[in-house]
Figure: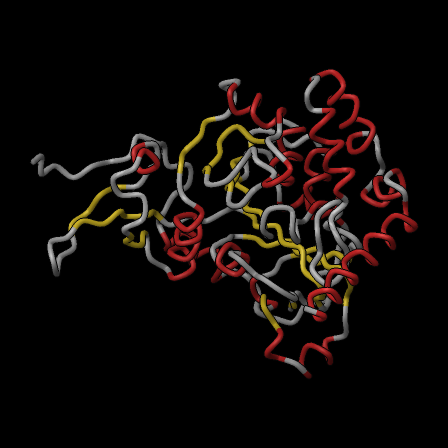
Length: 333
């Protein structure tokens, strides 16, 4: 049996040195300073050309759609992207051809809705360099950076083609001699998160599943948060156990009601399945898709104009009612 330790063939897109991240975070203010801004200003400041971006949420649930639209609207290119549980967020950034390198765990598919033709074309075009991981591996890479270590050992991916096309390395355990995959720390330049509530300082509350948001935020140099509503700091202090992201991780806060649309915001509004289906349909023809993206994103002034195009408050309230009905059905069961 070959005793050589294996090395993945993929390229490592970010520097795993945890001291670089810690030095950056040490310079960040710990003061309770108001951080409220606008979507346009936050993207202009924290998502420069070439930045490596991580996106919170899970699938089409609780994604920061308003920020992603603005990245496309401002014409950002050559970004790096962490494709962790990425569905409609991946679609949006594909529409703007915003990234040219991607750490891949889950992309292209929109779960039971089907595959994104545009995302598939983009990944097959040769314009995007891909490096493969599992969803768990990407989360553990964030966690390594947040912990201040350059890698975490795992048995995940060993013996698979996912390992082969990753940038992981096989190592020996100094205690048992066993083999592990060394998963390098991942420090995004910016992590984008949408939450239910936040105060002006960046203390955030999330209802429901949190997935990898805390790890992705703690591993990042900058964190930009959109929220359904801004709340008073007194409410944050009254329920400290609800604070999911603390103020010292967050650089910018923007109040964006329905900021996850057309995704699902648990307890707030259901996903707009008709609109998501429309995306998949228009993507089949590149020219039709470009016109669709122009109309819905590039030529809109902001996210509010996009919401108005999609039916405005009447449609959004209907989606809120759908979500509340689902919650009630769950209680009845």
